[in-house]
Length: 469
Ligand SMILES: *Cc1c(COP(=O)(O)O)cnc(C)c1O
Image 1 (cartoon, rainbow, N blue to C red):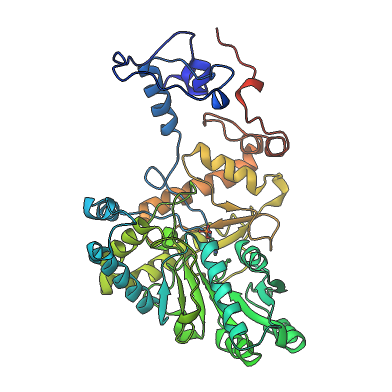
Image 2: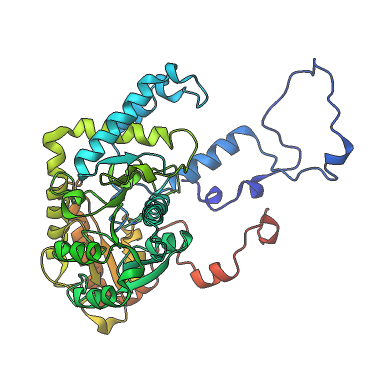
C-alpha cells in the first residue's frame, strides 16, 4: 500500500487545473440559472486526475473491516456471515427494479414473498401476526410500544404510562419508551445477572395499575437465559401489563424456543442481525414486529410502502436456505461457540458470572488487575492482530466489560486463532504492559484521543494543517 497516499484526504491530492474528464461540445444551448440561486464563489472541489481518484477510494475501502475479511466478535450486535446467495436473491432484477407506485396486480410475487416471510417469522417466534414495516430494531421497539399503548387506550385504560426495563437492557429500550411518551422504571439484576423478581414484585405491587408493559431480552444482554419468565409473565399479566420481547439477537433461540410460547405479547426481530443483512455502517435494516392474537388491529402505519424490501428478501432467502431442519442448529451452535471461547479464556480474563451462557458472554477485563492494562487496551491491541474488538464497557453492570459473541457461523479454527491472540495479549499485559497500553501499532491510525475527538471534532477540511509539498 502506498503510504504517502494513505492518510490523505482527496482535497490534499488536489492540484490546481488538474482534471479527470472531458465533456463533448455543448449542443443543447445554455440554461440560465436564476441569479437568486447562483453561487457567489466557485465551489472548492478537489481537482484530480482519474487514476488518483480511483486509487484514493480503492485504498480507503481496503481500510474497512467487516465480517467478510475478519473475525468480528461484537457482543449484542450479532455481526455474522451474510451469505452471498441472499444478496443475489435480493438483487434479482425482478425484485430490484420494482417501483413502489407500480399497480398492485403487477407486484403479486413481491407481496407473496412478504406473506411467506411473515408466516415463517410467526412460526419461528410463536407470534400470531407480523408487520414488516419498521426500519430498524429501535423503530420496531417504538412500533411495539405504540401497539401496547393503543391496546390499553382501546380499553379505556389510559393510566398505563410506565414501562419496566431491566438495568442490563440495550440502550434503545429506555430510549424507545421515552420516544413513545412512556416513563421508564428500572428493575434490578441479581448477582447472577438475571432479573431480580423480588424487586420486580415490589414494583408491580406499588405501581401495577400504571404499568403498560415490561421489556425483556432473553437470553439477556449478558448472554444468560432468564429462567423465571413464567413467573415474570404471570406478574406482568396479573397487573394488566403486556410483555415485550426484544428479539434483536434472536440467533440463540432460533429453532429452540419461541417467545410466543413463553408468554410474550409483542416482540421485534432485527433482520439485519439475525437474518442475513450486513449492518454496522448504519445501512438499511428491518425490525419486524410480531404480536399475539388480538393485537394485530393495533399495527400502526409507520413507513411508506413495504418497508426495506431488499432486507426482507435476504431474510426470506436465509430462512429458506437453512430450511426447517438446519434452522434448529443455529441456536445450539451459537451457544457452543460462545461457551468454548469463554471456557478457554476464563483463567486469564475475569468471568464475573460462572455457568453456561447462550450466544454471548461478558468478561470484566483481565483477571490480573495489577498490570493496569484495561479493557480499552485489550480492544486496541486486538486490532494489531487483525481482529475487530468485542463490545467494550457495555453492559454497565461491570467496570471493565468485554462482551464477546462469536456467533454460530465461525469454525473451530477461527475461534482457536482468536483464543490464542487473547491469551497472548493477556501475557503481554504482564510482560510488556506498555505495548498493550499504547496499541494499536500496526493500523493506519494509532490510538486516538476519544475525549478530544468528541469535544473538539475537526469536521471541515480548512482547519487541517497539512504539508502539500
Ligand atoms: C441492536 C439492538 C437493538 C437496536 O437495533 P437497531 O436496528 O440498531 O435499532 C435493540 N436491542 C438489542 C438487544 C440490540 O442488540
